Length: 271
Image (cartoon, rainbow, N blue to C red; front, top):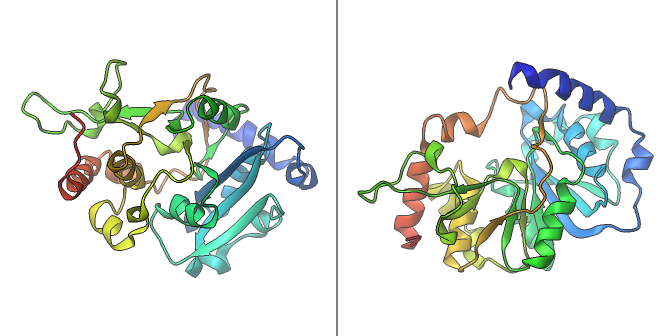
């Protein structure tokens, strides 16, 4: 977390914590027909209620918010999180530890619904959910994200480091993929049963759920696109940045090796 982000994170966190639970949990009457799904880890359990509050504060609200927590961490769930439980927000347990659980369980639970995944270390701004859904209504068969990267190769056909997967605007649509942190909208029934293959995703992309879902989408011919009218980037949540997949996947460039494994296994083509 950058030093300049601390004041705004503190301000928004305190503002969200002061909002009455009753007001956050009540239906707005014009909910967006999507399910927001996320997961968390033990080091963030004391803070994730603030992220949930930022999602509950969206206008319009989603029809449901699901938080997936590993079953071994059930005893660590704080009251600050339990107090938010309602018809709108539910806590669910899973045997999985990996980040893939933020989507695959919700697809099974709500197979006919649009699912929006989010991260647990961000405070989402007003309009975050609305802009995803509005773009979806005009592009119902595509995966919509606020942040997009482009899978890139060098002149010899080797994948460039993940840090260089930056979009310029002229890329092959097949090469586009989502960055999960800012939120990703998945239409219903776009994946086949392979998406649930735990043995396979833990073997090929154990630390990269975004890449696993990109591979599953590419296999089915489903494309990604950037949301229209995205709000400013989400605000990092203080006290949640010490443990992050980013440090391993990006700083150690493990995203590139995991994508290569997925491409080899499924014979994926983006050229």
